[in-house]
Image (cartoon, rainbow, N blue to C red; front, side):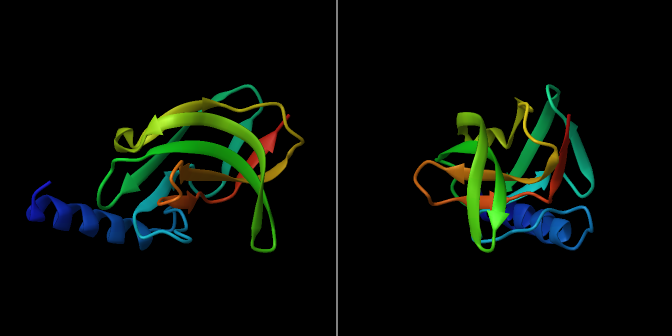
Length: 125
């Protein structure tokens, strides 16, 4: 990727961070989950999009999980996808039958180098 392309990508990511619908970037400077956005409602059994931006090398694969938070600790409630190439920047997942409530989508690399959460998602029956 050229220096111009990297600068352009960085500008797009920074613009996304300033939009209300942008996801919260927690621990990584390399990954930003932008879908699902604020107010997302996912009925159980439906197919939903998860999408992210990657800044920097995209050599990892990621797993996609639905998690709940207890303070600063996350608990995996369901694995939605495993081994998705990071450079695909998205995947369509099926929402499992879970207790209705608020969850976060966690996109995390198998190496632990990339890690980011979505905005809260409401799962319904």
